[in-house]
Length: 355
Ligand code: NAD
Ligand code: GLY
Image (cartoon, rainbow, N blue to C red; front, side, top):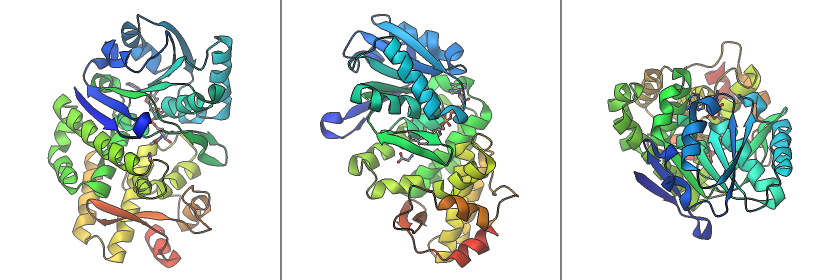
């Protein structure tokens, strides 16, 4: 098992990565402090993984709350539903909430945990690649508002993250690819060697090689843990984790949440950001070709939807959380393996790139 620690003083917590750890009581013992656990999951994950998890929780009184599947349900209505269930179950501030599912379940459950009686302990058990390498780590919790994604939320750290690689065996191929977009992101923003390693091992990853998945997830969690420890509430370096997201969120919002997967939109967003970097002279044309080729190897889209031009992007980008004092802040690679945030991008350049 590999263990990574997110170092946040008294709120530090472990991320454990291995195969088969979902059904082991040892995976949870040190992060559950009372005898009551409420598992929040959805109607797709429940039949696949809940029984395995319950084997690990035999020593506790466990209740299960199930929400409908899908990004369109990451909203205040489902937030209210879970809170109401907790009240009906007479959950206290000591009850541990456990999120079993992808980023939607994890983000919503985390926000419930941050809010219920002003905060209760919670554990992330991410079951998609995207949630294992990104959303379960770092304490960003949120639900969507009709006017904007993740607009209502809190920074609230889990007590631990338990990542069972085996759970990926049932993940649809398209969801796996979406997770790979966030994996590639870490290579572009932080670790050139990892980017090159991904280029070499893409086929093995596409074949779900356990060894290569374990290395990949561990490396991504190490990078994210490092960045979050430096800048928990995104005052500085943490913003680089949003590479591709400003453009990606515009695609998700314009197409209607759920049509484009988050990772698919981020993949295209990373290519747009890399094109900006080429114009700035920070990436070479051959770097851009490598980014596009790696993204394409995982069968991710490499171009924006045909029905979107600059005006559609501009409309949504104004609502982005990264807008500060009216100017949009973009994450752009400085080179492969490093990125920074800038507002200094001419509209004319964006029009040229986005059409
Ligand atoms: P998701 O939670 O919708 O999961 C994708 C699909 O896979 C769903 O249908 C889900 O039910 C299904 N699924 C989950 N585990 C499965 C398994 N093991 N086998 C088969 N099917 C399974 O989507 P996601 O990609 O995991 O997460 C996307 C969400 O994460 C977005 O809402 C995004 O905003 C959020 N996000 C948050 C952060 C953060 O830092 N908090 C970071 C990135 C993304
Ligand atoms: N997914 C971006 C972040 O956690 O900051």
